[in-house]
Length: 493
Image (cartoon, rainbow, N blue to C red):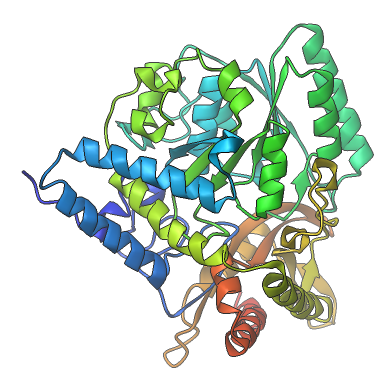
């Protein structure tokens, strides 16, 4: 029998090329190392997160347990058992019990989750946010297409080719105006209503994607309009909450599920686990409606039968198979979730408010920066209010160069991308500290120049660390130092 793979090898397996380390840098596509990186100030959790020492320790321990178990059992049986244990604990940490009758599907990434969901529900029409505000492969996945030239379980896949004989139509809604400001909610509601009314007239089944929150921190479209549409046409509309940032309280998560909305999550952004760990929470009613739907064999490229809850006919056409990489990445994320769920509102909100004030003041009083505006995070329409997730945790901003005559000029998209890359390099031989922010996001135009916004983000591990006063002060200080480093980089462009 072959030796069980090492933890570091497993952590980059069972995904696609996005998590393959570059041989020269040791970093994946998102700039994340396979190992904990003590010299990196991680402020980019809206894009991806770097595995922590706590996460690495947990993944190593699980790897060792699995290695021992497979000495006496088959890898398949060990994987099946460990996935069941993961599912049970994950639901519990999300505040859900058996009485809630919620199931969890696991997959390598948020994009994989949406692809599998679309293959399972097979809607005639899907409506989602502007793809610039979410995962780059999501639009293709929701139309039933392979979104990459390789895949989680089957290696090579022809990008853009159909996964199965199902084809879905996709419409997208712009979340921001040309000036980068959030669109007026009334105009968004009117546009969405028109799309839905036209679709239901021809008996189309719709999948509405409610993004909570997007790359720049919006809830979009409005919860109220999505809720009304689903209540008006319950037999034709299914709602999925794209909460892959996982910036949700237990109360908000439960509230969405009570409304029979599926919820897509990942462990690799706010939660702080390594890149590539996705999950879908499925309410009992949705499972009942789709219980006879079996996935086409093309979905084997993205899922094994053990990744699905037991009893789901959707998995009958999938291979058994194992993905210990997915299992270990989720275990690393679970180590962070276990710590985070021990905190209460009184422990979380004061730091969130202090961080917001410090970062907002820095942006406001420096002509090099302009905050990208966002409305308040309001989930009261689903009965969730007064929770920590009402606080801002993503801070997008546009960068300006100050000319010799004192005038401001916005950085172009390519210049912003250069700043993002340079932040991840040491400033000089003496200064080894590096900064990782959220990748640049298209954000309209300023002064006729197309621009991108960078993002400073708070993560769950930061909130856990911030329970110590000195750690809290250090986190805020390092976030402010990132702005100083950006100004230095601007002068070299």
